[in-house]
Image (cartoon, rainbow, N blue to C red; front, side):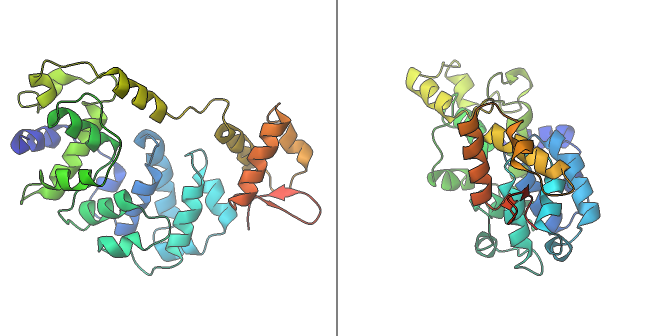
Amino acid sequence: MDTHALLSWFDANERDLPWRRPGTSAWGVLLSEVMSQQTPVARVAPVWEEWMRRWPTPADFAKASRAEVLRAWGKLGYPRRALRLWECAGVMDEVPSDVDELLALPGIGDYTARAVACFHFGQNVPVVDTNVRRVYARAEDGNFLAPPPSKRELAAVAALLPERNGPRFSAALMELGALVCTAKNPDCKRCPLRATCAWQLAGCPEPSAAEQSRAKKRVQKFAGTDRQVRGKILDVLRAADHPVPQSAIDVVWPDAAQRSRALASLLDDGLAEQNPAGLFHLPD
């Protein structure tokens, strides 16, 4: 992979994301990585900035109630991430720099741990997300679609990291996947790796039927799913300043069985509670 071309492109095209600005703390980077999972950064940025004003340190965040956290999370999606982050803040004085110590925190997975170690602490460790996997599949393996995730990817991407500017190379690789080497319509004319891209050199072959089928299975639908119903119920609870009756929840979705299933899952996940009077509310 042409490291110089990629870094030169990144120098000219890096997005001005608030968590990339000088002075951002390790907590700010950790928060941005958790918020940005499966969520566009355009939606994340204003919420991140509000959270950093409100809870600038893990200690500040740990003092918040779960209800405050879920209201502040709003519509970022996958609200369990918010509560796991709250649990994480409650067990640390400061964000650790070591990948293994980061992995030991509640709710912190392999990607997030490596992203914080790399992008804040400057450690030259491989950071592999969907964007990186896609760029690697095309530029190195010559495949339009990336294969299913595997631990072997870490070693493969680690082999690409330059001794100097490794963390910036990792950020550039991710940025290229987000802006140019996109999932459906890559803008290959703008790609700094076009001259050496294995997929381009192979004549841009179409993915096989098996690859297309596998990719379709990985796409998560939202409309009509239990996840959508959960979101609608949470909207009711977030908007209420007091516990609400079942009737306030019943109006959000016509399918009673699906609505009941979604509510039960929220209760099981600790995202909602029912008081002795039978009313529903966000957790305290």
